[in-house]
Image 1 (cartoon, rainbow, N blue to C red):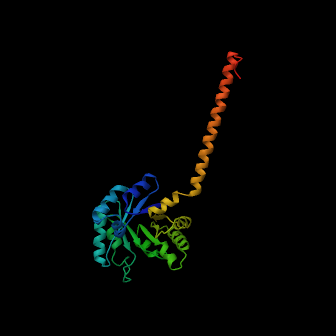
Image 2 (tube, helix red, strand yellow):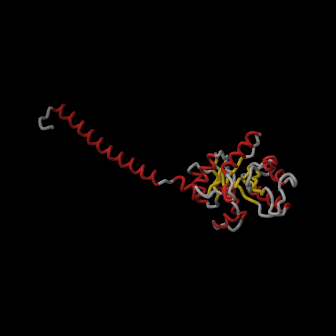
Amino acid sequence: MKIFIDSANTKEIEKWINYGIADGVTTNPSIMFKEGVYNIEEGVRKLAKLIDPLPLSAEVTTNELREMLEQGKWLASLAHNVVVKIPVQNEFGVPLLWRYQSVGEIRHQGKCHRHPVLRPDMLAAKAGATYVSLFAGRVADEGGDSSGVIAETVEWLEHWDYKSELIVGSIRSVGDVINAALAGAHIITVPPQYLDKMADHKYTRSTVKDFIADAQSALKLMDKASLKLHTGRFCHRQNDKRCP
């Protein structure tokens, strides 16, 4: 299973890459703006360079199909590791799959990432998307079984040997990460604050504290025992009656 960082915070991204946890990054204009990025091109280029050769997902921002295609080509041209995020349909319900061949036209420059998906997305996989997204939090909002949908989607993709990987997003808690992992998600894109929480646990802290205290006490006893042992050997060799 891979973990992508859902962020534009370069310090957080670099931290998790250095920890050996991050396998890629997902972002969008809203995330960038929150991190003080006011120019999409500069932001995408900077992030792509920072994580190279790991993939960076950057999304198109229009409903108009031809504009979407042009934006996708432009984003793909910014760096070799950019993955273009295209919605599975626009807000008017127009599917963005085979009809306009946007995936095929963009994919020659890079990779394509289909989003958002709220049910098993067979069509995006058949259209050739490198990644398909499932928004687990939004599935749960509607009363759906997000873990079940994740498991069904992964099973379907693997049964028919599709190369698309499932990215689970809309993560809102550590529990969401764990549930997606147990359901078999190929990739989970996680905001950094939840990775921090996954790495920290108060009982782990207290257990480590106890281990260190026990170890230090044992080391002191070992030093005393070793000193006594060596002192006894020295006195025996010297036959010194003053030795204990």
